[in-house]
Length: 146
Image 1 (tube, rainbow, N blue to C red):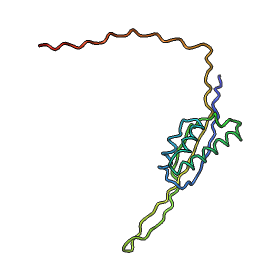
Image 2 (cartoon, rainbow, N blue to C red; image 1 turned 135 degrees about the vertical axis):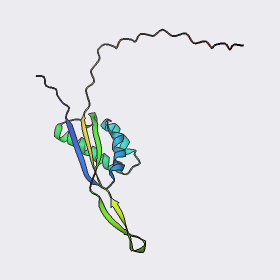
Image 3 (cartoon, helix red, strand yellow; image 1 turned 180 degrees about the vertical axis):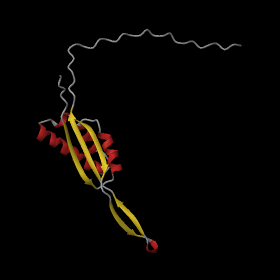
Image 4 (tube, rainbow, N blue to C red; image 1 turned 120 degrees about the vertical axis):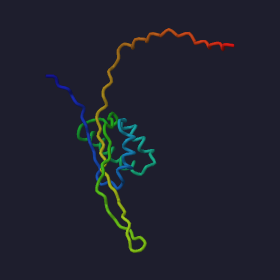
């Protein structure tokens, strides 16, 4: 029986973030699959307000990895990043003729999971050169029949 070492996964969650899940998903989709330094750069220059909250969760996950598991933060990859819907705060606003308009203040739960980057095998010999394919002769234009 062989043992396969699975890479360590570290997770961080922020709950009840005052943003809709739909807006947070736009930001989490951009950082999924990237390394931590690349994800931090994208979040720092994002124009969306929820990017600050996602960056806080990313920082928390990196801190968890360094403190609890002894991993290096710059060598981690964002495996999963998603935003689930949280509870909705329901408020009311007065409208004309004694009616009300419902105001929904949505919340979301943001989760980021990190793992170690896979180790690249070190190549000792250069890869073999690709064989060149023979070039095909250019096609000639057919002469128009008179």
